Every structure is written in C-alpha cells, then in structure tokens.
Amino acid sequence: ALAQGGGAGGGGLVETAVHTVLPLPGAADHFLVAARSSTAYVCTLQGQVVKTFSSGKAVGGDFAAAAVSPQGKWVYCAGEDGVLYCFNVATGQLDQVLKVADKEVIGLAHHPHRNLVATFSDEGALKLWKA
Picture (cartoon, rainbow, N blue to C red):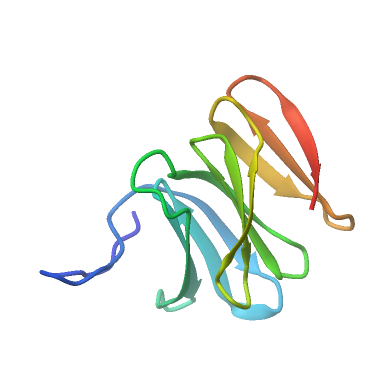
C-alpha cells in the first residue's frame, strides 16, 4: 500500500494498492510508483516523494497502468477512462492526452528502442501509438 501522512488540511498520499513500480532511467535512486489513484509519484529509495503526476480528475481519472520512456524523459499513465496521459519528467507537467480505448486500459509498455507505446484494454485490443 502507498501511504503518506496528510493530517487536517494537509495533502498527502492515500492508502491504495500499488500496481506499478519502475526505475527511472537516468536517476539511479528514483522510481515511478503508480497506484489506483489519479496521481503517480517519483519516489526515492527511502520512500520520499520528489515529484507527482496527476490526471487532474476527481472522478474517472485513476491510473490503471504506467510506463516510463527508455531515456526517462516521459512518464505515461493510462487511466480507467481510456485516456493515455503523457507527462514531462523534467517539468512534471501534463504534456499530451490521448483517448486510446473505449474501456479501461489494463496495461501499457514503451518500446525500448523506438518511439512506440503499446496499450491494451478490457475490450481486448492491443494498440500501438507513436510516442
């Protein structure tokens, strides 16, 4: 479970099941951590959150899968809403949004040598996207 304190009036992580933990290329002690929420995190080996990526949706934007580009410049999070969210790692900003499925995306991967992202969804479709 992913959790961080957030008392009265304070923000913080909520306790939820983690589905993705990936090393961040180019940052040996940082990991992308994604859970069933609308925010993904870059954390240190000690568990400190150093960056967040959010769909910005209060409802329907929870991330179901996540991937990192091979050089660590982009984070991709697939939402339960069938949308692929592309974040710039350096700035933390949401850069692109792309509707990739009519049903929930259940997985995604970035090709190791090409600018391709693969998504697969509850509808049984595997799709390739130019990254």
